[in-house]
Length: 186
Image 1 (tube, rainbow, N blue to C red):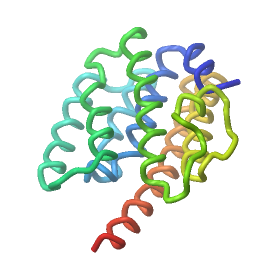
Image 2 (cartoon, one colour; image 1 turned 90 degrees about the vertical axis):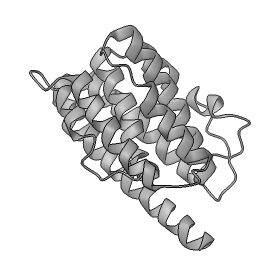
Image 3 (tube, rainbow, N blue to C red; image 1 turned 30 degrees about the vertical axis):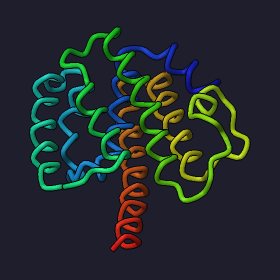
Image 4 (cartoon, rainbow, N blue to C red; image 1 turned 180 degrees about the vertical axis):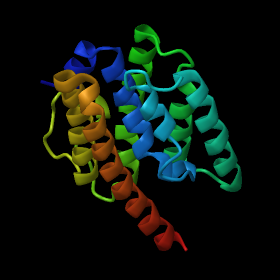
């Protein structure tokens, strides 16, 4: 099943986890620490915290971290837009639009940061199942997005821990890419 189909079938919690996971993997571009989105993850559990309040705290922390960064590039701007577009209320309609936009943005970020050429004209082809000549970083991000949605579809709230682990792995990879890129510039 393609990523587009998985997003179309996901419930509100799956969509929120999908968008949050995309954002979480891109935190290294925003200058945030690994725990900054943890309260948002907790809000997805049954009886978890308040999504809106957790979102505002994360935005404040990442805005402060971002204020220290200067001259953000396109990848960082896409990540910052993901954060800014997160809906304050976790409703199915708002979360669906956000999760879909996060999917596209995260794949585009990985495409921008991958030194290998991606053979597709756009990330839309990747989301619809086209995998020919896919660059390694984009392929890994696509797998992570699919995995998160499958975990939530198959296990509900019980899949959140594993989804967070998948996201953490992706964040480590992206942090290494960002670090290597910074060393190459410096």
